[in-house]
Length: 117
Image (cartoon, rainbow, N blue to C red; front, side):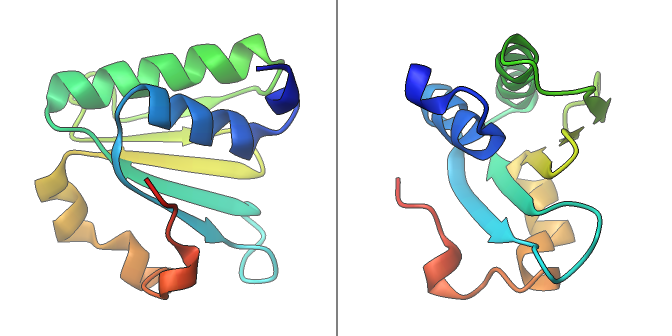
């Protein structure tokens, strides 16, 4: 994982793949807002899966020296938000993700912004 060190987006992407997160979308926010440069939206299959993805992602980012992290949505695990500064990750249960539809809000419905996998 040396090639990923220091790049929070690459670390997050790799971690989400390892944790079998589903329907991962990466949105480039540079120039759209000052809150972050990148937003990743992904889904877990259940409350437990969402919690496990969020926990592992926090561990990976902290181990890489990325932080401080702000985390919201635990212990309910319907929607966990991890704010890592220039990177924001939303981990949803599918039903909750569909309700809030952040991809549409941030314009990620363009095919080139989807992550393959």
